[in-house]
Image (cartoon, rainbow, N blue to C red; front, side, top):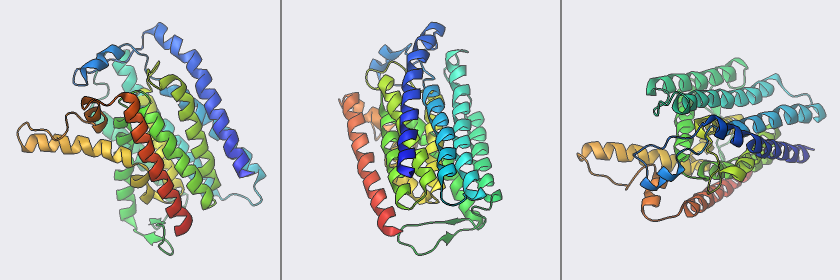
Amino acid sequence: MENFVSIIAAVIAFVVTAALGKVLIPWLHKLKYGQPIKEIGPTWHSAKSGTPTMGGLTFLAGVGIAVCVCLPLYWSAAAEPVSTERCVMMWAGLIMGVLYGIVGFADDYLKVVRHNNDGLSFWQKIISQTGIAAAYLAAMWISGDNGKGATTIPFVEGQVELGFWFYIIALVMIVGFVNAVNLTDGIDGLCGSVTFFAAVSFMFSAALVQILEISIIGAALAGGCLGFLVWNFYPAKVFMGDTGSLFLGGMFCALAFGMDMPILIPLVGIIYLCEAGSVIIQRYYFKLTHGKRIFKMSPIHHHFEMCGWSEIKIVTVFSIVTFIAGIVTALLVGFGS
């Protein structure tokens, strides 16, 4: 039954996302909600100026509808009653993703409607993002799902209790990786493709440990990404904007925490980690060496662009890396539980 519901979730998310793209893209063109291209990016990206953004609204709706339909469907057919704690955590994860999407929408709105290319200020972003992550962790604690700050680690018997430090580490991890996913959205189809494979990894890993709600949410997220790639793969007809990338970042983290295995985040999200790491390394190396650079441009996907790689090649290689990381993750979860 659970596999059937996961398939339904993936199909609903795909169909809704792809269909909304057919409607939304002409509307965004009509409103002239085109993406402004920053001058610091590769010069050839200027040709993309005016491509509609805020396309993330399509898969935010697609994934949201799929989860809202399929989770109750699964629970209604479950052999045993589902605990309140698990219900709270599943809905809290979806709400966290949506709230991050709303922050992204505000940022996109300022950029394309108010013509403020910087969007929200750094502090507006970090305070809102931290508040959302804190609210999610508070829901986890209040529901009684993780009062001792415990986490599961493959091949380690029982749960590892970190107490208060769990919440500090979790807060930093969520905010950090949400922004790392945002940095990955820099070329056509990249963020959607990488997140598709990350979602599939969580879908199978969760099924292996019988956390079937996460398997359903992972399937919905994968279906939404695939539906968006119909419009976003090179050459992109629409960009997801911060609306989409922040939503994907929130959902990515929600999948790992919903499995009670946030330790998987750096492995499944190895590309996100490299993207954010390249920006940090570049920035501090530039300051310490008074103007020298390690990468031709950061985030690292731009470095490969400057080295002559096509956008399709970058998307393919980064997706393969995520696919391999996903297989390793599933093996660790399957054999280590």
